[in-house]
Amino acid sequence: MIGYSNAGVYGLHTLVNAPTTFTNYLLISSAAWWGNDEIDQNLIKFKADNKDFSGNLFLSVAGEGGGMYSNALRIASQLEAVAPLSLHWNFKHFESDTHESTVYPSIYQGLQHLYEDLNFNVSDELATYGSIGDVKNYYSTLSKRYKYQMLIPEVVFSDLADAQFQNKKDSQAIETLKLFVETYPHSSFAYTSLGSGYLRTKQFTLAKTNFETAIKMVKQKGEGDPSVIDYLQDMVAAAQSNI
Image 1 (cartoon, rainbow, N blue to C red):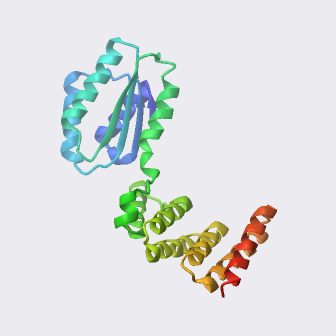
Image 2: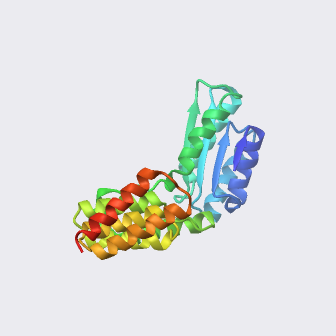
Image 3: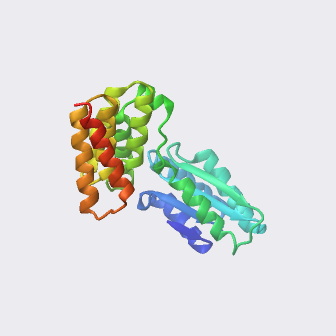
């Protein structure tokens, strides 16, 4: 939910009274002219009733001074004191913006903050000590949180396999690439990646089969970039020469 000014008040009311209505709240320069006691009571009740709410909140205020600024600071200080530990929140003061102009930087930075968990980082620790199972669990948790299935992005499969190969985790890298193909059965990139993995591990017949499958997919989809076809044909020839 994105709420600006008076709609920001509605967002605050929803957050503290029915938080699971939304997963992410982006509230901009909320005209929070509530009585102090009402703010305190609502936030205390919010913590007591929603200890496990794991949503996100991005709260912003412009350099507008007066009651708008003081109320925003009050809400932020109350959140610091009583918000559920599971709530991920951030407060931003856009002091060089007005009530009107703060909408745009708030939305841009707010969306980045609220959805930063969609950008999975393939760390050295994961490549060394983890597995594709850890990534599956991460996106399974996201799917439950956002209430729809979120597939592991293609680039995450590719990046993780590359990192596993670099860490001499060849068998784990192959398992990662097999799941890549299973998850994206119509992706030429997936079959090309698995073919490259088999080539790297000297499983030349399997490498050839996957490169040939990738060629068929590229042609069927009309992806007529000759350089792609040439590359895949070179990979087929490289695998064939070792069989």
